[in-house]
Image 1 (cartoon, rainbow, N blue to C red):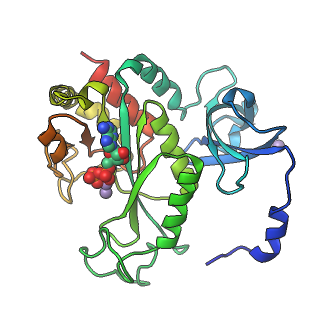
Image 2 (tube, helix red, strand yellow):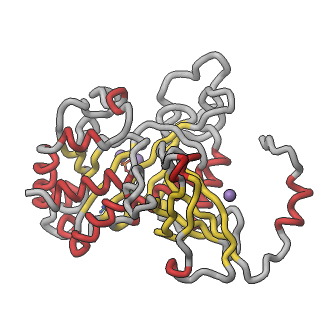
Image 3 (spheres, helix red, strand yellow):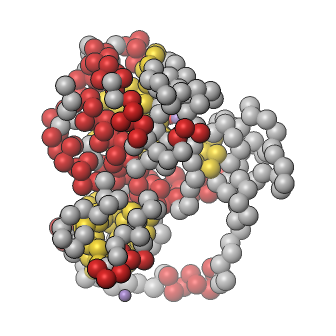
Length: 336
Ligand code: ADP
Ligand code: MN
Ligand code: MN
Ligand code: MN
Ligand code: MN
């Protein structure tokens, strides 16, 4: 399947050469259009603390993040992961973007989310995100679909197994292992209802780390394209016996800010939240136990035991997780 203009067996000896004490640090950041960019710097020795990494910069005029006459945008290291591509002590560095005057860059939603999370630390907000995505061939059709046509109707593909039912298993396995190696808190995968559509779950992650881990999982996947991104959420009090009353109180608050949430729950979400295909309608808020046609679902086992977490089914796959986790906390814990 490789389209590289070189042969991997000839390249391998060079990549196996020792690199001495030096370490490669790949700085990864979110660009002006919500895509990911990265570039590498050599660090003199193994990095054990994020404080050892320097603030770096890049040409923001090439990434839709700054005008040409004032193009430098700063990269401030925010989280470190192991690099599954280079291995060894090499690392991936998720970085926040800042303008020349010290203000966060337009698409740096982590800056605000971090402030929000710092205010509610004692309530230990946990998140679990279900990232759905579809794999495409180079020609733009979903991977493995018959050329110029459609596969058979939905039914056998969700959690499917075997030829003609599951597509690109090799790539999905590689991504899963790369996440585990890197330290991304990936918690599972499943094939979705449409052929070539998959889902991976990340979490539970506490506070700001949810956004960090999801963005890094996306980076390891490469190009991805969407569907939904269910957002599971709990606080310390929701997770303890009797927590159901805190879950209900949070749902009540969410019901009053439906439009504010929809505004940050992804582009083109109106095409997905039609009220059909296991979604609630974009125009109205609803909730229910085990109800996949509602905005918020309380899982059956949570209702049965009386505590746990809730699932917000509204976010689209193209969300910025910092915005979604941030507004979730603002609405449920910081609004009267
Ligand atoms: P679904 O049944 O909706 O397909 P999944 O199993 O795909 O659910 O995803 C559930 C997600 O919820 C996982 O990412 C998991 O880590 C997360 N999760 C589990 N417990 C909690 C909790 N107490 N608070 C927040 N998220 C949680
Ligand atoms: Mn240069
Ligand atoms: Mn799921
Ligand atoms: Mn799903
Ligand atoms: Mn779900």
